[in-house]
Structures are given as C-alpha cells and as structure tokens.
Image (cartoon, rainbow, N blue to C red; front, side, top):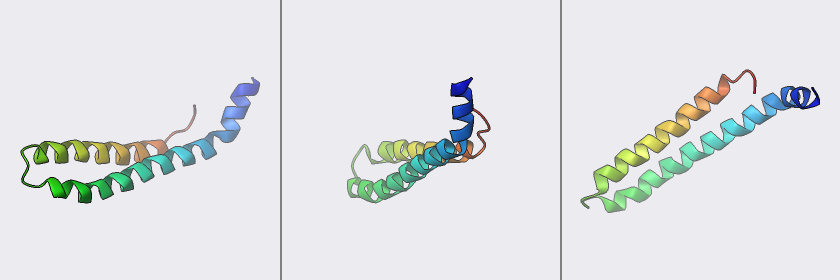
Length: 72
C-alpha cells in the first residue's frame, strides 16, 4: 500500500519528467536533420532521412501519449 500511495503522489511529476525527455529528444533530433543534410547526394541519404523522421515522430508521439497518462 505504501508504494501505491507513493506512486500516486508522484505521478504528475513523473509524467512531467517523461514529457520533458520526449520533448528534448524531439528537438535534438530536429537539430540532427540539419547535420544530416551534409550527406545530401550520398546513396544512403534518403534512408537516413526516413529513419530520422521515424525517430522524430516517435518522440513527438511519446510526448503526446505521456500527457494522457492517468495511473502507473
């Protein structure tokens, strides 16, 4: 029971931290888009951009989903 109460008390803070981590990952990977442009013209450029887009979308989706968390 003590652990359940502790988790319930800290839920909002934990969710806030998780959202901040996903938001930081989103913005950092947006910056990596700029770095990836130096590979333009290389054979693996488009594959790298697709992979980076998936990571950016997953980070953004994680931030959105974390907002709706109601319990552990």
